[in-house]
Length: 509
Image 1 (cartoon, one colour):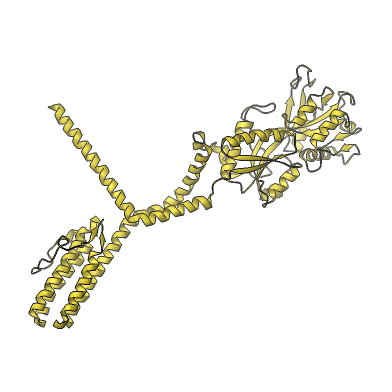
Image 2 (tube, rainbow, N blue to C red; image 1 turned 180 degrees about the vertical axis):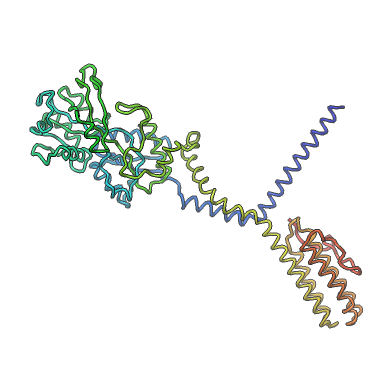
């Protein structure tokens, strides 16, 4: 018996839940039916906002990597693979060097929007169009000399200028860094300086056409590796590296332990200190935020690991202060990767992020509008009902003040038109009582007109006018307050046809 009682209670509970869900679903359907024009408008506004205010990220991006054979090209290929995994095509573009990179980035008509740029090459004037996503690696200044041309331990900088030295080609990062060093050393110019690209300089050094070589490259550079493998290569130690970093804030000290490049050759033969600039990821300020975030993700994945010169997690980081840090980079360094990008594909996480950021202000605008929709609709229906009551009142005034028995057919026609308007109303369930109060008033008017026509006298008109006024007033009150609906509208009111008796009675929703 206890089990039966439990089953009954459970059945009643489930039935109540079912009825509740069904009522809510019906209310939702009714709301959508009533408010669909506004909902459609809001949807279109949201769609246009998503597309034009913050459009989808481009599927094809160009990245400048400088000259062929450099460390930027090696690193750029890793970025290409990372972008491809996220559905974005990253195209590598070769240029003559840092100067061309910066010039093309500043050109708003150029499709290039990102480049690897050495620290120390940017100017404050570039800050107007460009932004930085941060530094992603160290780029040491490698000064090589041939062991068959110079003796080990020679420390005078001017001594190396006694023979040909390759310093990069004008417009390249290597050449710009060479100019920085020469300025610090007070060297104006020298006939032995050879201006050639890094690749040409590396080849000339191995052939013996130049006795010394300045390269500003990452350690993975093909040009650098070809020089390091040559047995005659020696590395100049920057004994005063600390002074360079004080005088040039974009320089950093890096160290190579004895034998770290080749234990077999014990190369270098002693602990060596170099000065290094950093590689910055520079972008056009107009780059899509999602692509900026993807670059930062790639930098963390590719450059964030421990490398020859950097610690684990040291990059990416904001180390170059000339260019302003982009808003996306600030967010990345402060809070890390957006939550969704850790669990969803890039395209889906980016889409949800865009929609969410736009939906918040859109919801703030749409919520009060949607919330007011039911009240707005009820107000419109109530206004139509009151308009019909007004028409009834005008008809009553004509009957009281200008009644003509021969115009009875016109009076009936006017009343029929008023009744047709009431039948055409679409009434929400909450205003059923108002609707039937209106129908009762119309039926009372019809009955009153019939009695008036039978009596055909002004006295009769005046006698029943008060009853009509009571009926109309009661209907108006019922329209204003549904709780009064169904009240008696006149003692002598003859029951007129109800909605059940009249075809096409007012529609409810």
